[in-house]
Length: 217
Length: 52
Image (cartoon, rainbow over all chains, first blue to last red; front, side):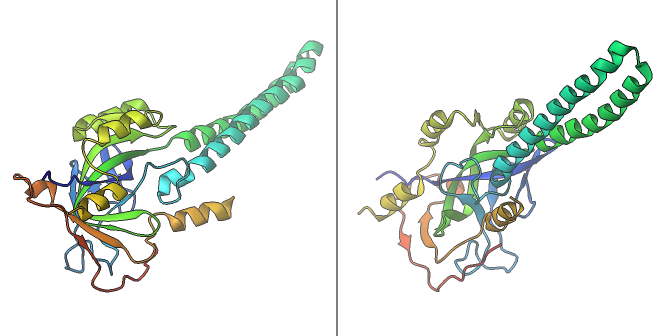
């Protein structure tokens, strides 16, 4: 009989420099594999503890509340849209105020208004860019050894290997590709869900299938 | 919105309820394929929900 495949889980990492850092406890993932260790000294993960390598049991949706960064994306996009609208509105207001002044030859008031508005709009644009810069990546992990699944779909595992990285919307292609190359794993983009799942099916099973495989005689 | 944001942060990676447990042969220890399917284990004691 064929060996059971690892359980597929999905998680996120904060990208710092060229490295991936766990968004939960801040441990760096220097390579594509991670071993769970509990500071209390017992084998990890233990059902009565919170230790283990964390993941969720399905493809992370936009705003998935089980992942820190992914949960904030809808709010972040809303803030970006509002800030962009404020910047464009401010620009239109500036033109509406300055145009008549320039027509009358009132250069000084027009310049003062332009400088004041430019300062304010610069702040809005800077905030817009800052909100839009997301530094997290999603990815799929093959979980093996002891694997626990909680009622809300959160998985905790003994051993994890990154199978692929997934670039969420709003994250630059270049840093994502750099990290994927450093870890030696393929990179998929957020809109390539079906392609990524087809690739992942060769590396592991989603939880329901993994449990069925474990129970088959 | 702020409340929703805070709720999201509190809910992230929170573990809820007693876990199901399975054991899959570890990838780094399976040079030879195992002879049978992975056993399904029951937790020996009740897990306490430990939210983070």
